[in-house]
Length: 272
Image (cartoon, rainbow, N blue to C red):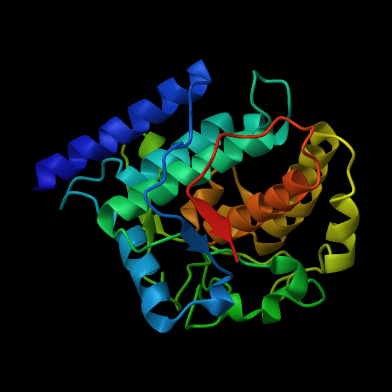
């Protein structure tokens, strides 16, 4: 069993690299059912617990062997190809479409563990004035700011979370605790409000939207939260998926009002 999980992790990483390089990533076109992606605030306790359990399951390394987990594969992929999420014209896919497919494959990996799981999102503009006071940083969800010299996250659903990258790239690889370091010490500077984001959604082209959402709106969230989130290895912090999922929701909102724009392949989820 353990050997199979390790092989699956390696296969996931290899597929990710090959698929992105070839531009051949495609969402599933045939849906047996449509799953619902919800704001984390609207999840039941059991739905949140199922999401956390599935994420933890794919980050379980072999005992005593600090080699990449399936989760590590997504982190390294993001670190290598992160510039392609920020721009248009890399190939036939926009950066936002690439992000969408990246999220979809992560969600499908979780669903291989628990078919009931879908990615939650964080409507972070609602917390723009005082981001650090958001419920997402409560012990019931993602936990708060890090503590100590390494700014380890000590509470929340991922208090015992360990990350592999960039440590796994070292000569003597090692796993460490998740780090989170708010930009202003114990607080996070205000970021884009709902009104500001609404203005961004008036972007006339996919290029303009990509630059505004990925280069400004999301970037302010990542740097404000800091720690692992403020690096090229942002998915080390599972909070990354909630932020990125909301960016995809905004992309979805924009696409509905711009039918002339290149439309990504059909997906088996919708936002509520």
